[in-house]
Length: 489
Image (cartoon, rainbow, N blue to C red; front, side):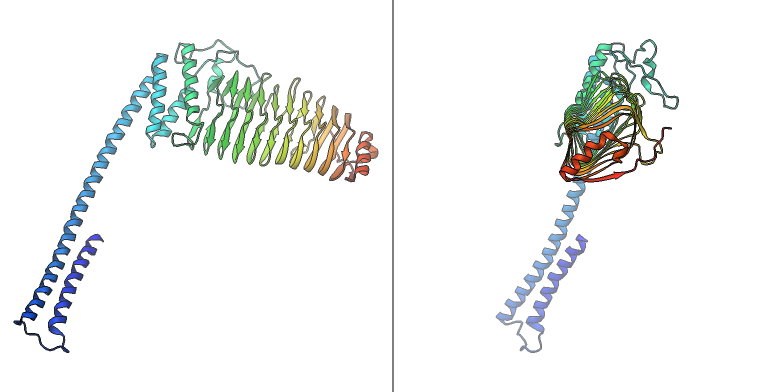
């Protein structure tokens, strides 16, 4: 295309010169010019000079274009050579760092960890490969220093790499220096954390982090920003104090499938935005999952089916403004608790579905609901009610000015469910599908000035007369419905 333009430009100049000659000598309406006269000779010289200049300009354009093409080709060859040299250097650095990470000496492994991280910073095309190596190091066999958890293993579960340490003598990993190995593993997590605490050009945002099968003892991911990341903690063993405090999950996919939580898991003041976070594993008697002050603005946070829930899950003072929070505890035991005390619900759908709870407690004291929902009970597809057999369930001091609180297909059998000083300004309270076999469902000093209350027939449930009186005095709409036909399985 460029050659055509140059040639066309040259031909145009030649054509203009030819037109000039025709205008001087060949126009029929002008008198013939005497070529030998001084004026005619001067005109001929001017035309000839223009013609020569045009042809010269065309030649100059062709020569300049040719030089440009040669320069561009030379520059391309130089860039390719430089890229080959850079790739060769990156590969050599990768090989050296990998050799260091595989050393038997902890100090050399530490140097290899830092070398691999530095290479990831410089080598954008190979960054994910470097991150994979760092994560793979954490997946290597490792015997935790603290006590190992005990729990029942379901037959259908898939084996996990660290199970060789459960129920027998600890087996040494690939490195015999236990203290040095613990330091190296801590450094790997620190390096990852340093590259995920911001979203600047040095950040590793958008990468994949696969910790599947790792033993994470006293691991700190505090303050990390997972933005557009894919993170896997599947089959992991969490021991000791593992922290995700003030961590931000933004447009990320994070899973804790088939993991075991044998210590404290801290998510205090973390943020969940447009992310999909799933917990599905075993809670032991030492489990303490703390989401105090956390915020959920969009996306989904699931804590599904812990097979042995001996610990606690706390959302005290959390802020729920959007998205979905779903808990599916199979059973609450002695000392186990689920807490939403003083939480704010302004748009999130909160669901605690399923289970037969024989002890423990569920605290919703002082929650402030303006929109969204809080549903406790059976899943919509389940034909069996949720049983409360010795569990204390409290909504004391709760305030509802919008949204819905519902007890859906709940059978109270020896438990105490109470709403003391419960205030309702608007919204909906639905306890129509809640049946009391033994135990109590009681309201003390409720304030009902608006909204809608859907409840059991008052003549069948004496403790609900306080709701009737409060709603009639305050102006809330009262709908008395017959109890659903719920019978124990």
